Length: 123
Image (cartoon, rainbow, N blue to C red; front, top):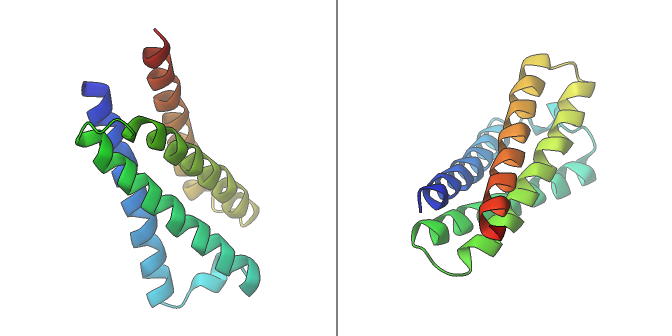
């Protein structure tokens, strides 16, 4: 039960942060500083919003103890992990070291939550 709460809160926070970040970036019209190519940027942002929505929904379902919250949690954490790894590449190439460190720590935490949740599910 406690792990479900931790997992739920984690994915809700991750999804919310991603949405808030991109809304701020889009409102300030600085998205070109992150990804220069417009076509690539469009699909990257759409993917981030999809990841965020899936993460928030899965977190809510976990907190409400719905049966399909756990499978959706694993999908959400997979999407989050992919987004983190992709962002590490984007910001690493631009030499944003502090952001890369934050993203790496986030990826490690995500992997740990996936591993712990899977281990408890199996055993």
